[in-house]
Image 1: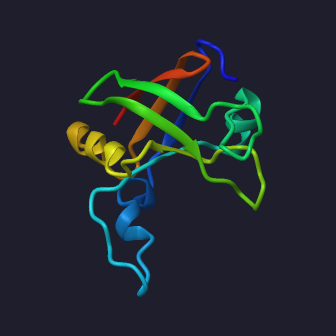
Image 2: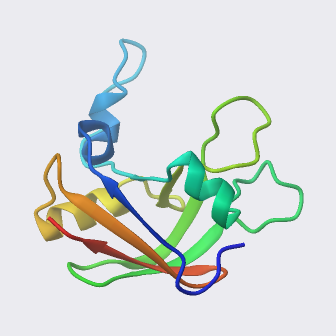
Length: 130
């Protein structure tokens, strides 16, 4: 589990800002406004950020934004291969538009940076650095 003060920064790519349209296929309609925060593998391993494949870890994190408007529960989710216990992204639990709305509130752009700072084992702050 992460400890207070653990932090990482990611650079935003088009898929982070427009997940619902980036992953468009001809079998699913595009969904505008979805977004997520990437968790680089080295930080998932270093800070033990697990998805729900882990038998005992809680993949839910209370989150507040330092700037913009966001407060909610993020789910550490995704994996690199079947059965992998390390998460590869944060998205709002039950609402893939939650982070997308925050990105819009801060004017996030491709190439901008997001800092994630853990304040306890299951809480964190997000900050758009531009």
